[in-house]
Length: 360
Image (cartoon, rainbow, N blue to C red; front, side):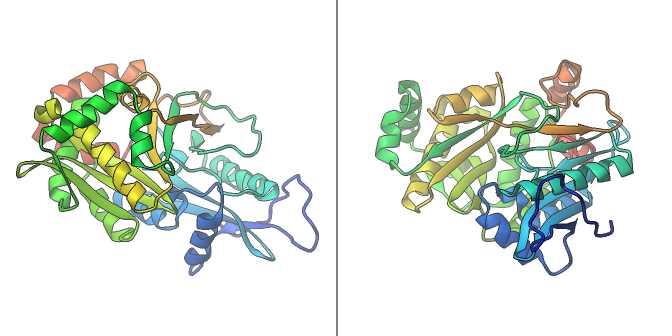
């Protein structure tokens, strides 16, 4: 897409003109410096996320950037999704719970939004989805009140955080400690993947290929860590964490059901919280959940701040916002059938199928 200047509709000082275009090769470090410094920046806005999306899903990302005389003023990664089943769309960003426009500049926000909408109109996709973490500027675009995110300020420290937990959660953590569970960083990707794949199978969701996790570790070696929970010599739970600024995000995780009696998930997340406090991290991001689901109920028992995620959609060929969540009625039968499918077969069929689902 050729570089283009857009009229933002907002006043911009003549001495600092605003240009909107795709990121030029070699400016990735400048992009990342902006994201790291921006209040609206997230891990998923980093330039490397587009590389993960390309390697794992085979999707091209248009990395729009708003530039002025003083450098970058806003960024907007938009990835294409081609699907014969669900139709073509644009998403910011695939594999991510957060995305959309990263800026605290009104003119840059307006120009970047117009760039994304113009691309969607030109390509004739069904819609452009923006997975906003926050919404700094009012929008009349349609949205869906489905997702929330859970966060915990870690500054009080482990002792006060433990005291603030509901009684049942404290009991589960103490039970897991008494059962002899051990926290470890000696977990391999194959060990993690087997546990994770079993967990998503129980949820009735197609699994990603192991390539996703190998790629994350390769592209973000300093921003990803893998932890596990051991029962004697067996790894019974594991979590792949993302690190961004002073934040820790336990992003992909799972536990073996035959050990649920030992509360491995409670042990795993409490151990991560305590360790993150000791290492000086300030925010524990428990991630996105759909309302009224098992994940939502589990996270609600940790006394964290709950924030609605203001996802927005620019509709092109679609007449209404997409309903692509497993909780939607049309997916209930496929979910039940997937749960009954042999586990080994889901690891074969899942990766090529999930690549075609826009909502991932």
